[in-house]
Length: 199
Image (tube, rainbow, N blue to C red):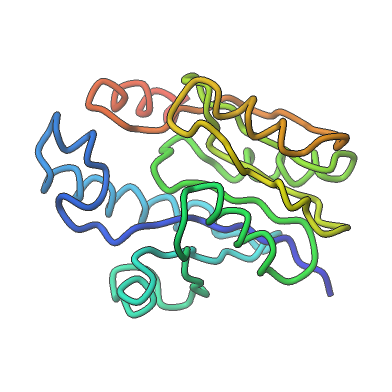
């Protein structure tokens, strides 16, 4: 039976190793605490029988053995490389069927957003959830055929071109865009994220 796969990318919430841009604003320990609790809340909220959740963990060995994340969720290592290398590897390693990858630092994600992404894959080859800064909070593939070798390569990450560069790595594919949500990189993003979560 083909199952929808939802992969959440997580890092061990160690001060100075996670959310460092936020940490420069509010302190590294506070940023790590925020990420840990934000991720735990997100994972509780997104549990749903319509899809199977897997954690893509970093660092690979520490994340696999971590007691911080729920023990009932499958874990796979993110592995080396930039964000595009890691996400492309995840897409290629999962069992057959539609798959979506999200970051753990987007407080506004709800089940309805994930459901819309999977619904879009019914008539599209790929789906993206845009972010206001030109990046994206979700990428999904229908995966009826192997993804192209160029998938998510040569993307200018952390720039306003990240989404357009990523779409360009899927030439000839039918692309859907769903809801725009913001991630949290700096202290100024926290009120925006809170409003999105409450709206």
